[in-house]
Amino acid sequence: MRIGSQGPGGRAGAVCAAMAWLWLGTGPALPQGLSGALVTDAIVADIRAHLDTEIVLRSVANQNRARSGISPAEVERLDTQWRAELKSPAKPLIAATLANPLSNYLTRLQAHSLGLYCEIIVMDAYGLNVAQSNITSDYWQGDEAKWQRTYSVGPGTVFIDDAEWNDESKTWRAQVNLTIESPGEGVIGAATFEINLTELQRRERAQ
Image (cartoon, rainbow, N blue to C red):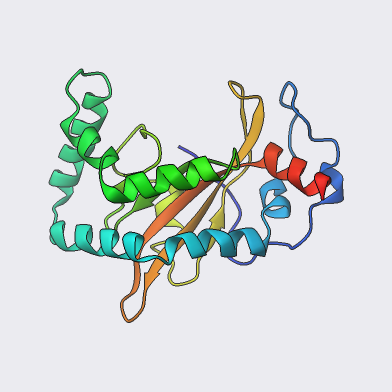
């Protein structure tokens, strides 16, 4: 779980000059707000374009209808089931979610990004996973900043979390979290795109 400090709003359009030293390595301490300097308005617009598609909007709307009136106890039960399935050979809930059309779409987006997107999650109006590109550690995101600081805030919200070092891949990453909006319905869900900041900086420098 990641709890960041940057609020919603537009991102700076240029790469911060202070980040010129960032390379693969041992994970130096990052200045506060690095993710906001690297993730530009154009990148956020590209992410929104991926979300403003029929497969995303329809999948989220369908799950909202299917989960309408869900109780907190049922949310907890589903989340507990998901976490139990992570350790079990039988994974009916995980398998059904990863096999749905939207998860397939997100997996292709991640693959086609060529290393820029590390993980993509789409959530419904209750903070439950609709789909994801990778297996997540839990099924309910409603207690996390990725949902609380997007869906609960309102239309057009973008929340970029603090950068974190991924020791396995030796890269810096940050989560870009934003609302999913349907024409005539407003905010229907939220999404998280985990961005590989090391790869993003490499691309910026190569231009």
